[in-house]
Image 1 (cartoon, rainbow, N blue to C red):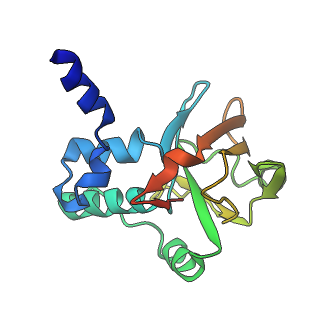
Image 2: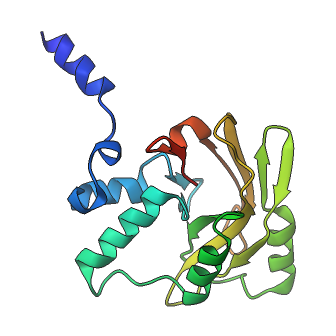
Amino acid sequence: MRSLVLLLLFLSPPFWEVKPPERWTDAEIDIVRHNSPWAQTLGPAPEVPIWLATAAPIQEAEGEARLRSKLTEKEPDPDYVGYVTEHEAEVFVLALSYRTLKGLGDAAEQRRMEEECLMKVGRKTYHIMGHFPPTPSDPVLRLVFPREVKAGDRDVEFQLYLPGLPFPERDTSFRVKELMYHGKLAM
């Protein structure tokens, strides 16, 4: 009997598939934002939180967090929000929490970031289309990539160059089948 209960728990869909965002607990919002298929942490130290900022569950979790916190959760940069709204069919955004702004103002470092930040899907490689730099009031680097990932792809890999960090070269990947939300690819 105990094995059956454990099996049912293991096979049950994640909370984000069965509950609307307004019913997510604060802990569940935190899980979506920091430890879900759409969010992870890049090592080595200093570890860098990274997330697919334009993925519907991330946007819903961030919206709920802003509604509940009123003052502590800041609105993203309006230029960024406007750009994403206007281009949501063509692009998605990979966001990284940036603890230091050192190195981001350097033109050579910025150029290197623009040249070396890549997305690989199957055998195809794509460069970033642009970025929104972090600021003291919004310490998030947002990298804009073309929306070329399809639900049938296996993985989407990122090779990143993050100016100002020790070990600026960082690699990560996301399993595409895990990025499904309500039956659709969420990036």
